[in-house]
Amino acid sequence: MPKSYVAFKWTVYALATLLLFAVQSLVLNHIRVFNVTPFLYPVLPAVAAMYEGPRRGPLFALVLGTVCDLLLYGPFDGFFTIAFVITALLASKIAENLLSPGFFSGLFISLGALLLTSGLRVFIQILTGGPHVRLMAWTALTESLLTLPAALLVLPLYRAIHKSCAVDY
Image (cartoon, rainbow, N blue to C red; front, side, top):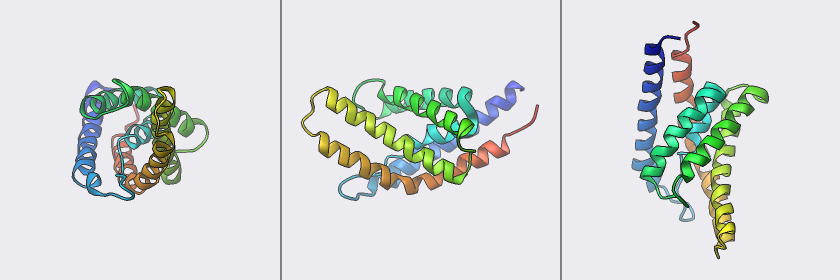
């Protein structure tokens, strides 16, 4: 595979991801249901890994997690990097072995990514002896269900990139 092809493909993914970051910041952050906002970021590495596989997907997740760790507040430094790489590994294995990449498998993988990231936050709260575990669990579930419709933006966009940049070499 030529290096120019790889550079082009991941540049297009990066631009699409920047667009989705803008959607999160300009639109989704202003939606509130039960005082919870959608959180689109965990869906991005999961869907990319579903299409790109177990080698390229986790690498994308590593970069995206590092960016999110620099921009967002997490339970600890490096949380998003770890959570997104785990999410990408699981998503790529599910897409490779259990479900073929497509719309419904993308929704399933997106929901799994949201629940995994939220569940890790709740698990860390339990480990640190936080007093509001039930509230965090409720928030995690609400956030996951609220974000799932926003995943409908990610699925066709990343699929189009994957399809249009797929070249047989």
